[in-house]
Image (cartoon, rainbow, N blue to C red; front, top):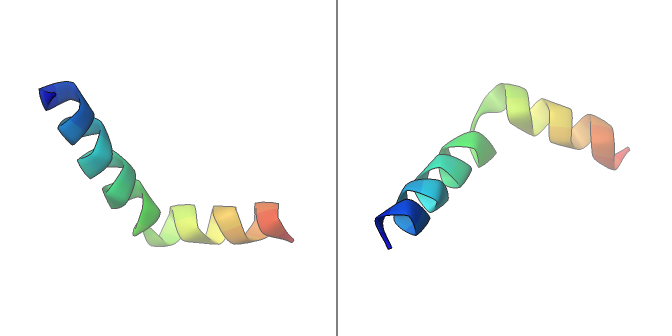
Length: 29
């Protein structure tokens, strides 16, 4: 359970990271 919560927090943190968002946009295009 702790691992899942940690992973979710980490995923959310990455999702909101500007650099990652830019990378995701490039991949989408």
